[in-house]
Length: 99
Image (cartoon, rainbow, N blue to C red):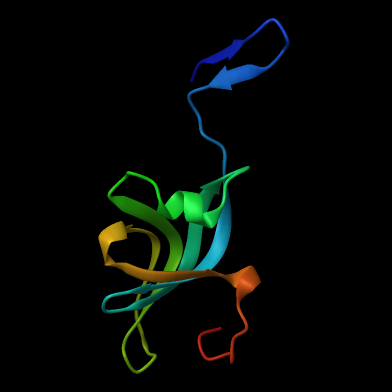
């Protein structure tokens, strides 16, 4: 890791600081609950608009059509092309089905 400082004391590093945001992600075939990771001053929309083909999801649960958990994993990537919608948990009004 390299850290550089400018004459005003601002630092620059190779590491991109991100915050984990709990979210529900609907793909073309499955519902996923987990954490997506956005830049400290960023928005979920900014992460979705990224040019990277895949989005990282941590502590993920993948649900089947009838609501059963098909998979649990600490880390997965989701193709951005397969994402239909994303709801950050702070914005959700849930019925408690997948909690």
